[in-house]
Amino acid sequence: MTTRERTWFKSSHSDGQEHSTCVEVALDTGATAVRDSKAPGAGHLTVPHTAWSALLSSLR
Image 1: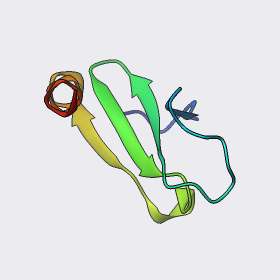
Image 2 (image 1 turned 90 degrees about the vertical axis):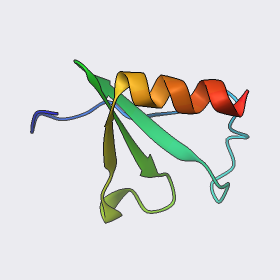
Image 3 (image 1 turned 120 degrees about the horizontal axis):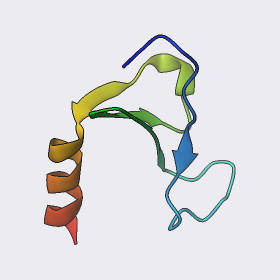
């Protein structure tokens, strides 16, 4: 991913509570960045869109 500012969003299934356990996702060309919503400054994991899609499909 580039060093530009990312737009992070939470799942539509998130309960919206401040202390909920949730991840945030930012999409970019060819990659998905994932971070802990409770510790956004702790870093993030970047994976190819295909890997992120495969993970989500396996969880459904």
